[in-house]
Image 1: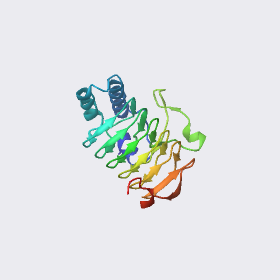
Image 2 (image 1 turned 30 degrees about the vertical axis):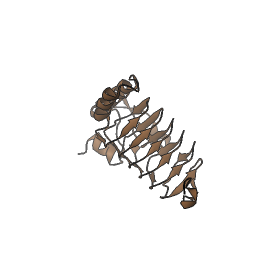
Image 3 (image 1 turned 90 degrees about the vertical axis):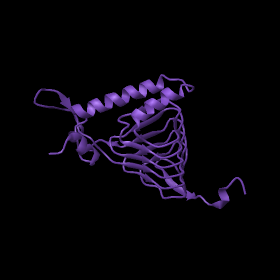
Image 4 (image 1 turned 135 degrees about the vertical axis):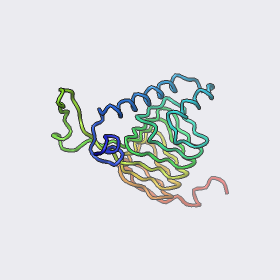
Length: 201
């Protein structure tokens, strides 16, 4: 029989009130708050927190803060990852971020999804009278060399290809192919990014 954690990572309906998951979220929330209480100059302290919060990060991970992670351990970041103020990552399913990715301020990466039918979304009591709800999650992948501008929301199940620019204020509900400039709500491809976009020649 699968644990609630195994169901969650498999994209199946699961109970987020499960004790194991609750303890993992509590730890990630505490570490996020610890990070947010540091100054930019406290580099070693920040590094230690990130090593614990994001054990799957690679070299050059810089988060301006404040940050908000649901689990942290289900987020993998590549080399030279930068995120500006107010990054929120709800990593109930795997979040994979490639190398050289820049994320602007006030961005949200959200893997959880709640059922569309109200009866399935409502809280329900267990045998002890404790209230629960059910949700599921879809993984998110961001490729290499992407720039996610400010106030972008990336929804569960989305894959963003390599060398993509997502315009400010976009809500990304479907996958975006490599070498694209995409923007809007819902986000859509506006045009390809080509050599003509180079500022230096």
